[in-house]
Length: 230
Image (tube, rainbow, N blue to C red; front, side):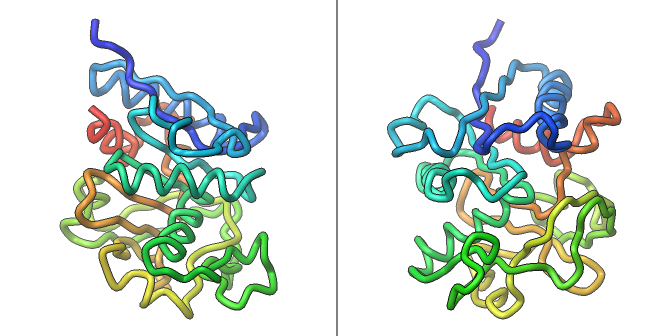
């Protein structure tokens, strides 16, 4: 039997969070569908002190339910996955922090902040949504030839959310000018997913595809993520 692959679940586990209930089920269903063993291990953000702590993981999923206990811990894990070329998925809060890490580290915006934790920031690259997306399901348009479009095998999907923050439209164009690209938009044209070019698998979604696992469905994006892990 092949050796189990361990995915780091970056976040602060809370059994009351719907996405946290769904993630182990999503990993299990996708693992069964792909025919190789995958296990997820919860990694509290406050435990992450440096990249050496993360060396034993094959891939990283930065999960919903922010603010995290340690923003720096989450950003360290995201940077490690990005720079080491290891598969990365960020959903909801994970998406938001992937954008923040990229803004600070790649674009050099040292003053980039998340408005949830720094409300008076001069450069809030992640800001409150014009319309909150708490327990909402919306249609989403995908970019052709994106990883998301290949995973879902179509250009329009419907997914659920539980979030109040997203990419600040004031900085959206600069943030996604490349190699970080916007690959999904809602009906108003707001960015709902990003991917990083020249990386084996680096994707973030404001929506929570893992929730489909609670209905017994294999989430297509989770399956694609685990294929990249293999």
